[in-house]
Length: 493
Image (cartoon, rainbow, N blue to C red; front, side):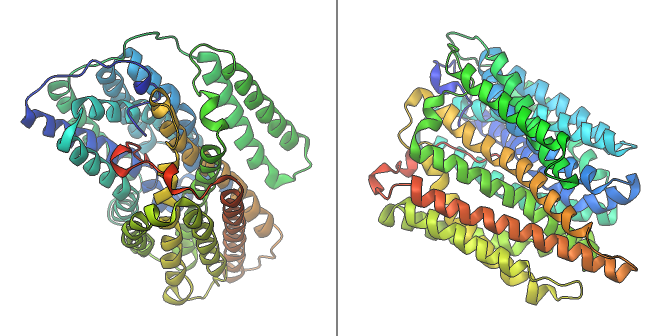
């Protein structure tokens, strides 16, 4: 995301400071970015151990991940506004304190409900901390080569955070305790607070500082109702509760659109999503988020619960996908100006979908190197083809005063798509496992594997839909692309 949802809309008061001090500020802000992205994945590896100790149901297990992604995604735009108007340093420090407190609460949770609440609170404060940190980076490095270097470092940390989370989660779960996957944030927060107080200078946006509170409330409640409705669907799509919550969610989101059309300072200017190309890119971002957050969670379950991998080995086992993304992304970047975004966004989802179909062939007694590793490598190739043009298109044709909101929407789409996708995949998984006949542990593992396979197929269907969206919405004009130096969108994980 760029500076925030509103930074581009108003003049900024840039902080002063020596060149050396600016680089220390970068270190602090990059650490903040690492925490935010890392927490999206570090708990994944810890979930089987947490589920066993706290006796979580499969639905509760899903909400441990969903609560963070949903709160984070739904509040990102509002968090950017608050940072700009209330003060970026102040918002950053409050976000850090709240995030640390929520992490400690989750680390000492004694029930599934407490753990889910803690994860939701982490998402709330991450939505304050992340846009504030990025806005501070923007005003600290205002222009020139130093700015490019700073954003490259920040973006690299964001890209590596998910992989670091899986490895660190494996180390902590296997050699210490799953609770440290949450408690590990506390020392980072303490360091960030002290360094932030000393090094970071306050800055604010000038101009109209009215908040779109009604829009924020309706979109949060609407998304929450929608996700909860999908969760209830495992008991039957025709149940009154399922239909009721899905309808309530759709109604509240429709009300949100109505509000955004009429308020003076909308949380989401609708002109951003009304553009066919950008709207298609945001829809694709949601589908990709469902795969990266939702479907891959079931892969970590398969590795640990079915194949019996220790937590650290399970974390390492997912790295080939990250490596493939890192190798292919520079190649896709070079291809982008030559062929345009459309071919990559049509072919990339199909490649990733083929990988998930292959992954759906897993068996309870299968071999990682035969059934999982090839799929991860191909999935990484497909995802790299999607990631590179998608971030570019988030800002294509956007007026300067809408640039922050557009990139924030792209990042929020990833998190919201992940929370909705995970709810859908959990429903698919539950519908398969509930029908299985379980007589012993071996048949239970078979049932789990069948459920994971069904979730992978559902994710593959989503990616095929993403390819169709690209055919319909994404033009092939290379001139629509932004020069790489003009992009300031930074993925928040």
